[in-house]
Length: 201
Picture 1 (cartoon, helix red, strand yellow):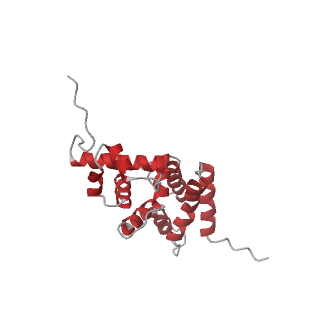
Picture 2 (cartoon, rainbow, N blue to C red):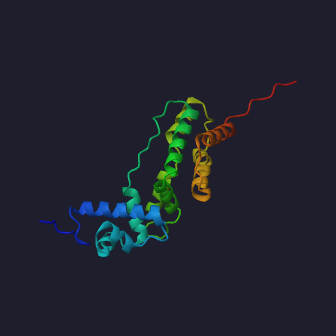
Picture 3 (cartoon, rainbow, N blue to C red):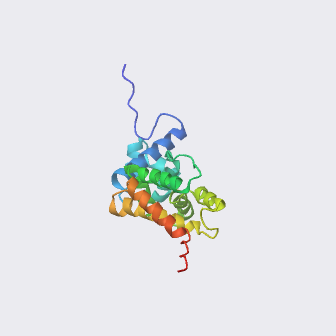
């Protein structure tokens, strides 16, 4: 006897199964079509649910996308800090560059620059803060060790390190390779360390 075909709008499983299916379908649509072209009807169809099941949980597209990104689990394959500033920064930036080389990583990064509206403004900003951030602990530890000046503006350093990664991935669509990452880290570190005083002649 053939099993009954599951009808759209009646997914098998728990409410959490439905949420996971919706989130997965949303991320897939972001990868394939991008944020502007994403439609809740398409997400519902791909997830095997009625669109009312989506709207009931997420009244707007922006809220749906934020929830899906929050629910996405990405592995952070950067190694644990070693106490060597240059090596640790390169490792973390390279891990970010690796994610931005994937369709999913690039799609999420682009989407985070598109989210607007009061309903998601705060959480979208928090998402950007979490993702567009270089490891603060590495910089703080370097300051404590005396490798960086005490007055180092870590917020600005993060921007200087990350801006090239996201510019290349989102605008140029050519994510950075390791030699490029090393050049960025070296240039930023040179600008942070005090210049050696010239000997008097």
